[in-house]
Length: 449
Image (tube, rainbow, N blue to C red):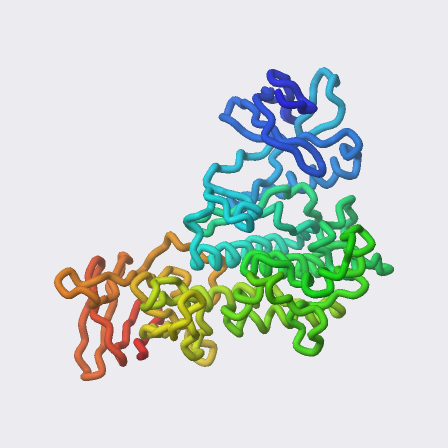
């Protein structure tokens, strides 16, 4: 056993009296250590708090979270308090599920480790979208996470699925807790220690925006030219950079903290390749939102923008790299080869009825798919396993694609010459500009060049 607080073979007991046996140390963090344990129901994980942090307030927070009985598979939620029945090991911990091996931490992505080499632009944007939706769900229950940072999110590089860990600091918005956040991610008012400022959903929005910027840009939004002038990045320097004098590196009104060529090549390149719809949201939250919390971008805004960008990702015909494109915007130059990206036709999906109809466009590149969330007005969650239709290549005519019905329902196709065709499950329809598809339930789509 590697210097853990608990010993291998040590028996712990849950509040219900069930025994669990310590197997091995997974790792440690700022609040405690995580162990694999054997239970009558299979392997689980236990987070055991450092003695100085295992106080009555943390126990109260923990029991409140357990009482919520969170069943969302995007969260490793506390399940029950565990203790040492012999009292040889003072304090307490909590039981949770073991993190599946397919999930990797974000630092592995920032380091470009081989373990996350499968990450594509699509999965990166999908991970950002899933992250937003996970915290949106938490906030909609009135719960503030309070410590959103790069160490609490794990992602699957193949699918973009995310897993939120270290959920034991989340509290009902407005309640007090010991943890205020990680300074690099904390809202400026918390860093400064403004009177009356406390961690909550509003400060979570700042932390979420920092996390999204890091995820998409691989760089901190406030770390530009000014940081290079700091000889010692101690707490006082961080307090100035993140609290008293924060300045967005791409603030349109103040260029004093711009990234420096040669020193910050990654963020310079990635910002240039970012669609305007996302750039505008980052500018809003890191300019007006720095001083006015109510101006911070909401989760629903991030969700809608990321979803639209994901649907507009297009493969460069010259080099085969994926490119983010501005929805309904002009063709960009490929970030890799510099050639103009050839935009494929777009499927404009219309949902809802009357004046409240919602429109979203899907670029029909060879990897495009139509998902169940495309067919509803306001999807609660984007599920990329629920495929309704996908682009498939003609078996005899290379380079010619159609949309194959992967649903269990029959589609109706109306061509501009007035002819009507039924497209059953497993059948494919050739896509031409002007073609109208009816998916059922009032949802329809039209192909645009």
